[in-house]
Image (cartoon, rainbow, N blue to C red; front, top):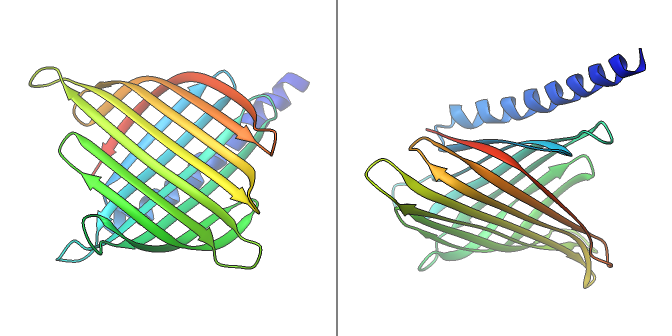
Length: 218
């Protein structure tokens, strides 16, 4: 009986997380943005992530970057959600100011900082340094680096690294390293993934390995 209740609770939490992220994706689709949708499964977690980058003016100097995530932990039966977005201006050579938001179960915050982006056919790098717009703020560094190695006319190697580091009063609060390695089949990428989380001043860490399927939606 207890096993059935636990399984039902897990299923409900996963469904809620998926529905939450689906609503975010639908709102982005209505804005005609470019999407990436990625389910990732390990022994500990199920993670559904969506992110997109889009220029929003004819000169392609204003842009929006948004990352949304729903995560369910199998050990604790707990789910978490995150919405993270930045509106940036390409002042010169991919560098410029950004402003945006971060929202999660821990609260919401307005953000302000700087970004740098490089976009090529098989290479993408997006980096930002920002801080919360409030007293006693958190400071954050975020980067997404992606490279595709052509193998033949239809197949490419795929690699992607996401790094997020968060500090407050020069003290480390949270870090995330998210690595993806696999094959690019056009609209789909699949392979192995590694998640490393570090928490607190002691940088207590945990590493999970699993499988991902990545879908590029336009």
